[in-house]
Structures are given as C-alpha cells and as structure tokens.
Image 1 (cartoon, rainbow, N blue to C red):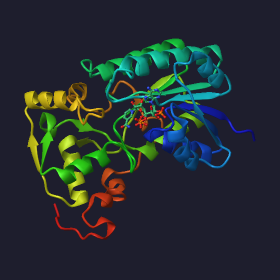
Image 2: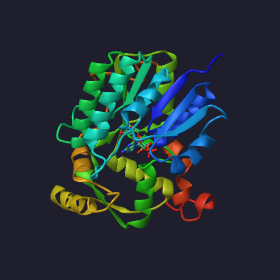
Image 3: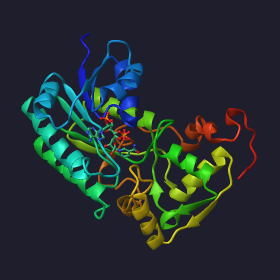
Image 4: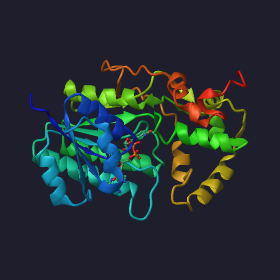
Length: 318
Ligand SMILES: NC(=O)c1ccc[n+]([C@@H]2O[C@H](COP(=O)([O-])OP(=O)(O)OC[C@H]3O[C@@H](n4cnc5c(N)ncnc54)[C@H](OP(=O)(O)O)[C@@H]3O)[C@@H](O)[C@H]2O)c1
C-alpha cells in the first residue's frame, strides 16, 4: 500500500519529534520543515524508520516554497509555536499570520486534512498576547479551511520537555521556590505520547471540522505539581507564595534574557486554570482517553535530577 504523505511544520519540537516517531512507524511518509537542517536533521532522522522521513529547510514565509511543499502532501500538521517573543519572532506572525496563509494554501490545493495545534485555555485568557494570537489564528484557519481540526493541549510533558525538566533543574538549584497565584492554578498535564496518539487517531479516523481539548487523566494544581516533582527527585524545598507585584518585577528582569524563565505575558496566562472549558469535545469524548499518570511517567526520567542518579536511595517520604 502506498504510504500517505504528511507535511509537518514544527516537526523538530517536543511534540513533533514524538509525532514523527509515531507516524513513520505507522507507515506514513513524513516531510518535516525546519529553519535549520544542520541543527535539526541529525536527530530528527533517528526518530523515523529508514526512508519514511524527509527533512526540508525553509523560511516559513517563503510562499512559493511552502506552496510547493503543501501541494505534494495529503495531510498538513502545524506545530509551530513560541512561548515568548523577540524582535524577529512575534506571536502575531507565528500564531496568526502563518497558520492563516497555510490554511488558504491547503484550501486552494484541496488538502485532505489540516491539523493545527493551538493551546488549551486561549479563549479564557483574553489579557494574554500569546492566547489572543493563538485564538485569532484558530479563527482564521476555520474560516479559510472549514474541515480543519484544531487541537488544544494542556501542558505537555515528557523526558524531553521544557516543563517538568526545567522545574526539576530549578528545584534542584534553588532553596526557595516562588509560587505564583499561591500555586492554585489548575492544570491537566498530558503526556506527549498520549497527545501524539490523539493526533494519530484524528488522522486515521479522519476526524475533521472540530476543536478538541487534549487533556491528561489528572487535574493538578501548580503547587501540587511542584510537590510531586520534589517528592520524585527526593528534595525538600520551601515553596513560598510570591506577591503579584514582585512576580511582575521579576518577570521584567527575566525578559532581559534571550530565553526568559518567565515573562509578564506568561504570568497573565498563569492566572487561568488550564482545564477543559466544557464548550468543546475532549480527547475522552472522541474515545482517545489519555492514560499516562503524571507521577509514574515522570518517575521514569526524574532520576537524572537525583543526587546519585538512578542508584540513589529515597531520603524523604512525604
Ligand atoms: N509543549 C507544550 O506544553 C504545549 C502546550 C500547549 C500547546 N502547545 C503548542 O503545540 C505546538 C508544538 O509545541 P512544542 O512544545 O512541540 O514546541 P517546541 O518544542 O517549542 O517547538 C516549536 C517548533 O516551532 C518551530 N519554530 C519556532 N519558531 C519558528 C519560526 N520563527 N519559524 C519557523 N519555525 C519556528 C521550531 O522549528 P525549527 O526550530 O526546526 O525551525 C520547532 O520545531 C506549539 O504551537 C505550542 O504552542 C504546546
């Protein structure tokens, strides 16, 4: 049987890497687009079965090149996204302009499926520029390509994430850790493999013209997440609520760095619970329940942050 061709924008990211593994193993032929083939192709190539992955370097705003790439594929998946802006990469360009124009190209070339990964909670967080740009992008995609599928994941974790791994590094180094909004914000973290299973099922069951909120099996507050991570890496740290004005000042300071730990826009996002809205279907409703539990999954890789690695004995029982 001829393999179906899938084009992925943002394939070198956390979700993209897991997705390429899943899709190429399942007989799909994937083309991943990256800005820097030298930096990204060598590890992307190890994710796929031989002959099932092409890596292409492109400027995503080179319309002719992008048209040519889209034209050759049956399915297009957009995973491009950023958490903070700089001069050349803005939320507006990447979350709105880019998805808007590729959805027009997909329509013009009668692409069978367009799957766009947005984020959970973008409708609620009206004062965040990240959320606003994601929401505008979603609306334009739906307008241009009626059959598009929008996926809105909660925070995604895995051994190669920027979430649990960054928190474990910080918790290791800092004796005191700040709790924004008293650590009360709720999340429904989803394991990256559960999310890629949802994308795979959306493709194979041809689920179209819908928005799906992608959530894990547990609802966990930020404070609870930090306490679980501390338990898993066997450390004791003081978690102290940080007054909002201090949090804002520290965010202004962090924003001076090329990869800020926290921005004021992220601080605004953190105010809102990251849980299903009740307005849209979740992955549970489309019969693709996420099964992986937070503690069990993180316990498989957290030993890298323990004092003696995987051979360390437990010091604290909480
Ligand atoms: N991870 C999460 O917890 C989470 C939660 C909710 C929603 N999401 C959304 O899911 C999507 C994928 O997330 P992820 O965690 O896999 O992201 P990621 O690891 O940060 O990867 C982002 C991807 O975007 C591409 N990219 C970034 N800036 C670009 C630019 N200026 N031009 C072209 N490509 C650019 C990168 O490609 P190259 O560097 O190869 O060019 C990279 O492959 C994003 O839209 C994100 O907002 C993620």
